[in-house]
Length: 259
Ligand SMILES: N[C@@H](CCC(=O)N[C@@H](CS)C(=O)NCC(=O)O)C(=O)O
Image 1 (cartoon, rainbow, N blue to C red):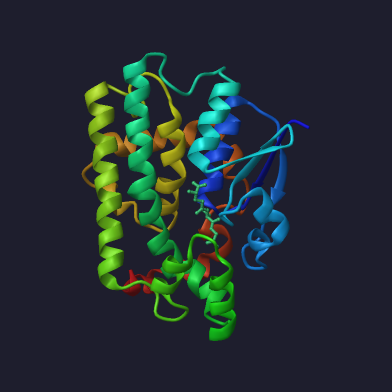
Image 2 (cartoon, rainbow, N blue to C red; image 1 turned 135 degrees about the vertical axis):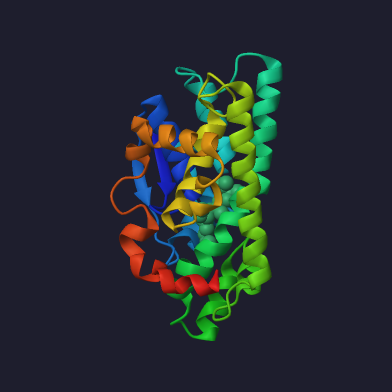
């Protein structure tokens, strides 16, 4: 039985869980799903994850869904090394960070990712009927995909708002590392918030948005360099898990006009 993960190579939510599994040194069985072929919307997968999204962890045959819930669950059942503070106040602060991460940078990162890569890659060459049929099957994401559209993508205003949210996130990381004296977001202990923010920042860096923090947020920049030096980073970001490695042609600088 043990641990199985239904995930996708490029999904930031899957990467959050892969980093935590690596931090814990856990072995797991991999089931890679491909969005292009709708693997995440089959009746079999929807039985495991009725939201039709990745990741899904299976532990001894029992599904656990939602990446934040999964990493907290892993930290409970495999407490060594701990990725949460030992005191109640520290855990409350970690949870506040986790809610912020779910509400602000996680949806923000989707906007430039879909505008620049996923929409043109998966949907531009589909017919409008195919696109609508796919969207109709999505239990959670209908409104997001309809707002994006098959051809138009998100508006300049939505992209600007998303970039402002990422900027705010990086300002908060910078301030927290400074105020707690680091080296991690909550201070001396590397926690779930370092792990779960990593794929979001890495996606932005990979799409050449490092300018949002590199020029004037030195603590943030140093934190990200330390994050990339951890062994878990290379385990979670195995070959071809960055968009630039596989879909670099969509990220050419001339494309920046639409961000
Ligand atoms: N709140 C969920 C969100 C999961 C999610 O949105 N996953 C994305 C990949 S990062 C997905 O499966 N998208 C499917 C789609 O866009 O059709 C979690 O954190 O697990």
